[in-house]
Image 1: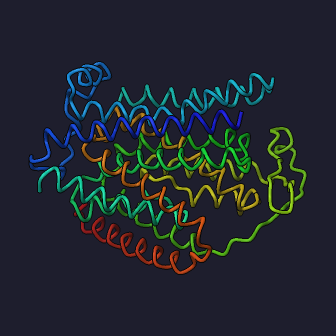
Image 2 (image 1 turned 180 degrees about the vertical axis):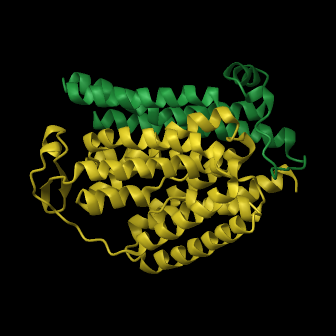
Image 3 (image 1 turned 30 degrees about the vertical axis):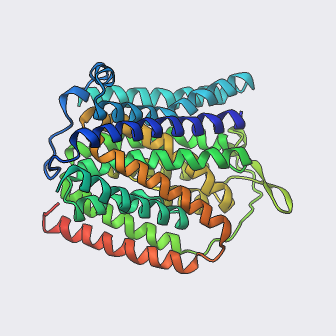
Amino acid sequence: MQVVIGWVLRIGVIVSISIVFFGGIIFLYRHGHEVVDHRKFTGIPDFIQTFGGIIHGIFTFRGQAIIQFGIILLIATPILRVIFSTIGFVLERDKLYVFISLLVLFIIFISMISGHAG
Amino acid sequence: MSVLVFTLIILIGSYFAGLLGSLTGLGGGFVIIPLLTLLLHVDIHYAIGGSLVSVIATSSGSAAAYVREGITNIRLGMFLEIATTAGAMTGAILAVYIPTHYIAILLGAILIFSAVMSLRKKSEQIVKDNNQWAEKLKLNSSYPTAQGTVNYSVTKVGGGFVMMLFAGVLSGLLGVGSGALKVLAMDTIMRIPFKVSTTTSNFMIGVTAAASAVVYLQRGYIDPGISMPVVIGVLLGALSGSKILVHTQSSGWLRWVFAVVVAFLASQMIYNGIIGKI
């Protein structure tokens, strides 16, 4: 189980950072000479606000969409780690820790929903 | 400032933040937020989003190595993650309602606290005590050392849990790993050996940050143009830091340098928060 968790974390980070890096190059190539202004909070561009928008952005080769996709994968990595630990505890027949892992996943899920409402 | 210059400045700054963060064990997020807000005048919400993402990257990257060495107490981590994720969710929700200058002041205070914590002398402690909760939850464990496997037990499970809840709230509110608080909870309250508490804290930071990142992502706090250089820079810096750590043992003076830098940035954050510039 420890070996699997180690691999999940390592691969998750490598894959997501590579995608972020790739998207970053496209982003800089297309927008590198524009002027930045992040002084005021204005949220993020509309086309990467929804998951569908990000997927569409990837296919139309938009750097920011590719970066955001990589970042979502990165955020998913530790969550994936909890899912793999849950499977590990199921295999070890440790009911208490299956319950504890599911509870952690449930809290993250609630957090995801509360973000939508806010 | 053009996007290219802006990206390069963040990239270089994040690299050094990640380097120092891994050498001292404080984590890179600590310098990122002051760097973005004070130097580049980025809105603090974007800075928190970027820092949070970098925290996930570094903690997952280093946790991968520690978990395989068998030092991390996975059961203890899972159990305490109930507290840290619940806290992180609360913190992320609170972040919307708290005015930004209070967030800046609070961040400054936590930075100073963490800098002081990093200077503390670390001694290994092994406690053999029978806490009934620790036994029920199977938290007592062992870890490998040069002298062979060492068994240890965990005390004050309830107190540690409450402290973790608090660490989670701060992590969600400020976008830092709050590793210092997690180690404090495990070291001084639950009396866990230092090596185990540091690696287990690292193991938990990723999940804790993810629990609040899902909220920030939907609110638009995580901007690709800012997170991209931050996450790449911090991760590369942390990687070089871990390479240096293997070769040198004396990082004593480095801790002092970093503590002074962090304390200076922290006071700037507090000052700017008080006069309302952030």
